[in-house]
Image 1 (cartoon, rainbow, N blue to C red):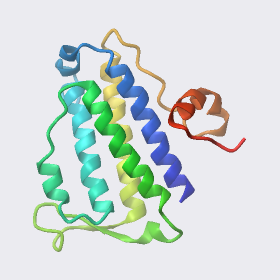
Image 2: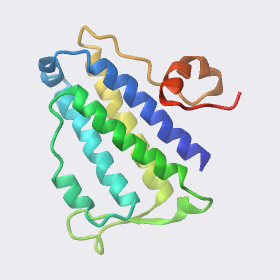
Image 3: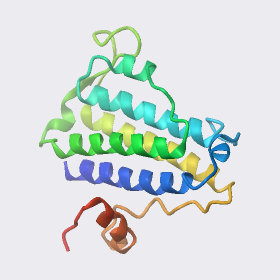
Image 4: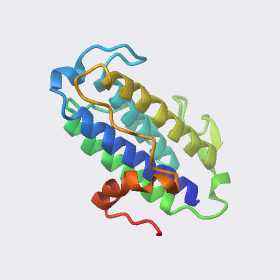
Length: 181
């Protein structure tokens, strides 16, 4: 379970860095058309957050996950998005912190439109692996879009290896997190 918590924390750190950089753009640049799967930073990052909400609801067994997805109201500014993403990231961290041995095999039910009873069922460990991959995938797209602006994209991949500790010490301190020496 330590690895899943580490991944959830690394996710929050990467989102904080990326969204802090994006927040320095004028709002018009946040919404400007760009080349990617979702054609703007705003659309890409709002998609990421909406999917996070859906999957986190499923992980918590919330039968309203489909309604949560459908009711999503996109953030209009990067600052608003950053605050909402941080709340979502904290919820995911809290969930992962509460996992016990064997939980990775627990079945998570999904509502893909025909009700939770008819939806797919997946082992929790695979759901989290998928969620972390989805987050990394779209963060990478946003990172590439940011490279096409005047804002330098931040380093996003130095949160897990012990030897990279020096690169995250300020981020960790800002969140009140501590690592074993």
